[in-house]
Length: 143
Image: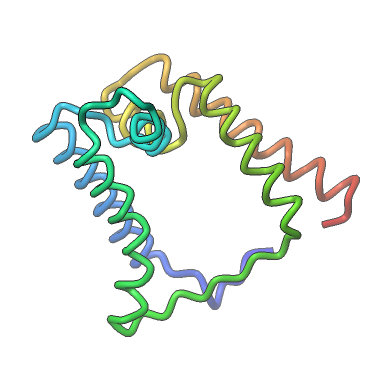
């Protein structure tokens, strides 16, 4: 069910424009794709010589909720899953991003904007797998 009283199209539109603008600036100014799995993967590799911008990128992602909170835009975090479920889900997402050669931000935001056929296929697979997962979980697990 969609909670239409909590539906916020304007803030979603502004957020989407900000993400798209940041991704466009990142590729224009640095020649790099702003895919989170690639940024984080490069940070974790021992031989990466470009750790500075990667650390700043990840630190910005982690600081954003705190900045929103301190600026009066309370971020309500509610996770309706057990720790074990979150660990398994995280591992599956990590394996999926390695198998797909990128994540939703890399393919969906950056790849599609570059008209990459590979990213189009990956994004369709992400969305399709998500739809199937929700249907299966709701049908068989009743969640």
